[in-house]
Image (cartoon, rainbow, N blue to C red; front, side):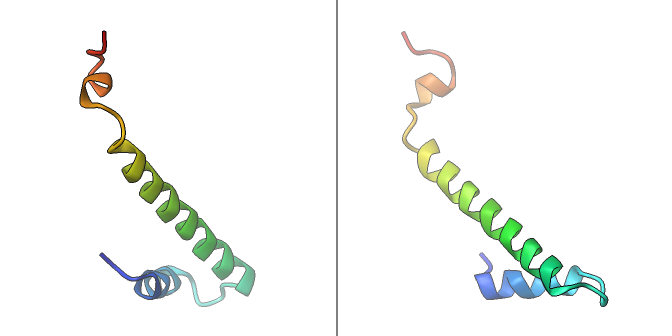
Length: 58
């Protein structure tokens, strides 16, 4: 898994040369939010019993 610093560098490298500070900060913010939501989803997915996920709860 990439570190936040590596991820930030990759995001910045994909942006055009004429990008503003505001655009850079927005892109980093969006990536951080996505990363946080994915981590929360993984954490809660493990809390749901498998039979409920499969619709087998009685």
